[in-house]
Length: 223
Image (cartoon, rainbow, N blue to C red; front, side, top):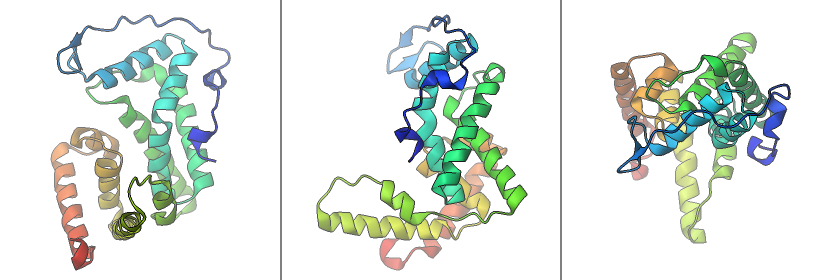
């Protein structure tokens, strides 16, 4: 059962916390879906939830969990290739985030990048402790895709997707993680740099090498 199917109660994260209302006033929304503080509306809303959770609102953290649990789970599953382990790491990610919620502050990026950073560190801890071999779970990722097309196109899309994931699995660890974060998780260059602990120039160069390598690995008919 994936995290999104467990329907956990937000209060289960910290039953001792007293529920309070949202105390942080939201800045006015600017034209174009952006807030007056310059953040996109959805991103700013997530940070409002962070501030509410810091003030003791357990429901706010529950909403953060609901918003980002699938993002974290997909990232971890791609890295470890095992559903049960991915669920455990995802749960530990949010428990660790809850313990550290008071220390996080807005740094111009979506809070989802912070959750992914925690998950990444837990995956690295697992790799170091057990020398676990990172693999690409092509079958499970392909299974989770929702294809809205006819049966012939669905078969073709599935074959292309599976082949692409197979090629991604042949990249080195840094290239693979860059591709996952940038194109499968949708993080920006700046957010990817934060997660991987590098500067933006290094991420751009890494992405360029990864895409170039993928072009070499993909069958000619899929290029």
